[in-house]
Structures are given as structure tokens and as C-alpha cells.
Image (cartoon, rainbow, N blue to C red; front, side):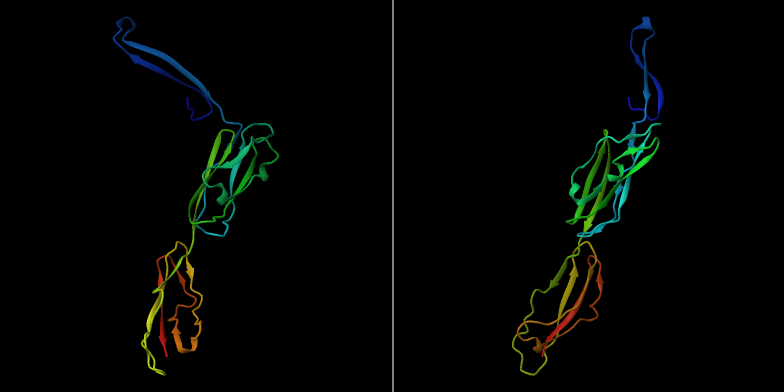
Length: 212
């Protein structure tokens, strides 16, 4: 019996057979009463993609007291596959909830690694799922090194390209490019307008480097 609404529900179970004495039909009455749980949870939560190391805005699951008297909520727990990727605050439902009143369970998403995460809020035999996806930028520089070979002193070699590509799932901010090491004065580099660019996942920018 899985009632779809409050109140009495009836049906009949009918079996046909070859017993002609009973009219080839057996019938059994069915009945039950649907009742609302004392407390109920609202629907689950889906968080927008969130950068690893950051925290989403808070969303709330609403707990409703379906009775005509004030009462405290049943025990509320937070579990499931990845509860550690979420912040869960049930203090708003810590006391008595007024008759036909509500309280809020506050949840935020704070991923520590990229990928999908989910967890479950449970109360009195009911549950609501929460989910979100952590995203993270990943810079890839190619080639890994550049060899200019032998170059006559005080002459300028041809330029070679260095490409920075975002292989991650979050936007990547291209900061700046500088020269370091033992002899930075013997090399020059042009950022080709890359400095300050925001590279979306899959996007790239190319710098040009030469030896003087």
C-alpha cells in the first residue's frame, strides 16, 4: 500500500478462474488510510559547479511540521557518498517547530577535489539528496623545454612558440610571463597579448621566445 494522498483508499483484488459455482470470479476488498508524516523534508538540492577550494552559496532544505501542535523534529543525520564535500548546519531545527511551521537545514558545497559529489539528509525514515560538481583549472605548458642550439654572439635567433593550455574544468587566469635562471638577459619573450587572459577549459594562448 503506497497512498498518494491523505485519507481512506479502497480497491478490489479480482481473480478469474474456472469455478463456475462462484461465477468464474473471486473478489477481495482492499482498504487503507494515507496519513502525512509528522514532519516532512522538502526536495533535495543541486549546487552549481564550484571551484575546488571555494564554497558555494548556502541553500536550504525545509522541514515542515504537518501537525496542529508544536513539536521537536526527529533525529536528523547527514551521510551518503561524500558528506565531507558539504557543510551541513542543522542548528535552525534544533528546537521546537510550531504547529504547521517550518525550520531550515542549511547546506553549502565546498569541494576539496574535482568531480561529482553527493550526500543525503535523513530524518524519520525520509531522505533528501544533495549534489554538486567540483571544478578545477589545470595549466599545461608545451613544449616542456626549448633548445636554441649554437647561436652566434650578439645575433638574434628565430622565435619559438610556448603554448599554455587549460586542460582543466574551470577557467584559468593567465597571470604573466617572466624570464629567470642564470642568464635571463640573453633571452627575450613576448606574451603576445596572453597576460591577463582568462582561458576557459580547452582554450590556449601562445607566447614567442627567442635568444639574443
